[in-house]
Length: 243
Image (tube, rainbow, N blue to C red; front, side, top):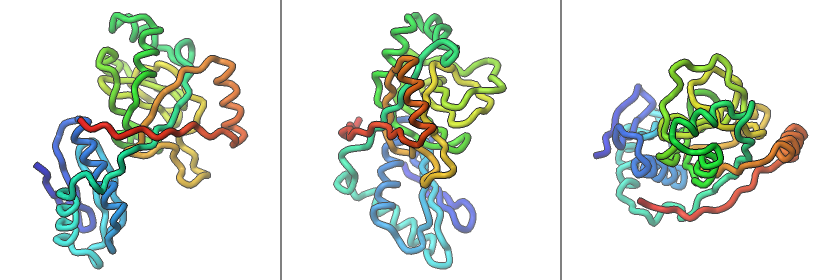
């Protein structure tokens, strides 16, 4: 059951549930897409989370009751207004070694070889459930359940920028050097947070992500192109699959 919760004088929370669930998250992104496709005067922005959508509005222009009615209308609009394909961006990853120091540990913990962990991690098309924690950090849903491992008992004080990590049933990419408690499988040469660009983040909520294993020489080549501002990650169109 969808709930509408007031969050101060200028924000509305549309709550779809409490669980981290792909079907629930898909509903969140569907409403977000519809609100952006049919803009309403006074609606400032909408920000997706795991199971809710935060809607910012100008109460001097848009009454709360009107906004709720607008959201309700789109909740019952069906699937016709939604896109049937989604962008999938390819993220190159150098797995293992100093770039992915937890790969062998994860492999031993789940009873697979390192190569099998890489294959399972890279064969999935992930959904960016939400952005958070720091600028450009994507919470990615869709991790193979065989790779489910808890967060580190003792988080690292420094995780290198570009680290590709997993924890429980999610994957993520650290856009900046920071503390972190996820298991590091590899590293991407891409910059996920680019404050000098517009938009300043590479990924956005609702987008799809696919990881591609690369060797050290290819990693170095892409890193050089990224530094020169010449690299454009491959983007494909993936058909929307509903549960």
